[in-house]
Image 1 (cartoon, rainbow, N blue to C red):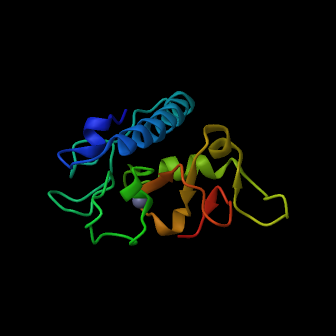
Image 2 (cartoon, rainbow, N blue to C red; image 1 turned 90 degrees about the vertical axis):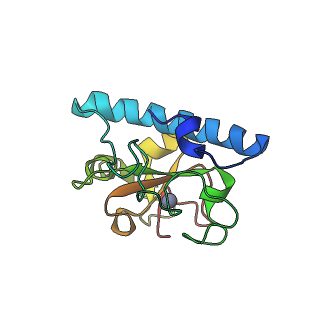
Image 3 (cartoon, protein in one colour; image 1 turned 90 degrees about the horizontal axis):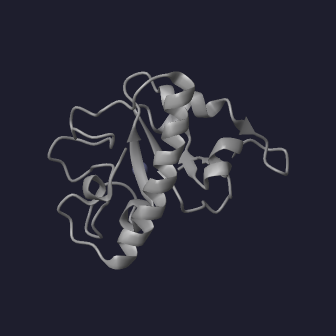
Length: 150
Ligand SMILES: [Zn+2]
């Protein structure tokens, strides 16, 4: 379970951010409940953050909300809109691997559809780009792919 308190920490944010984070985390937590039930496991805790959010200890480059001034990631990062979270995926990448089984072709036959992510209204960065976390976002990429290359 990731709460908005964990997501924002002490970072100042507006009402729009709170609403976006509640939507994002509600979707993420529901998806993780399914994962827990399917695997019989509990969500791993990142020792650096003490939560299910991936990050570095005391670093600005954490996987929760990012201030507009953050230098981690892209300038227009969905983390700054409170529409993305980096879900800690331990050393084994088990969550990504579980999600892989739901991959389906896009309507045009190309790769990048995902039935489970679509069910929950989420998108993720391709596992190749996220070795120990899963970047989940409610912001659709331009390609519309549920699993997209950052
Ligand atoms: Zn991310």
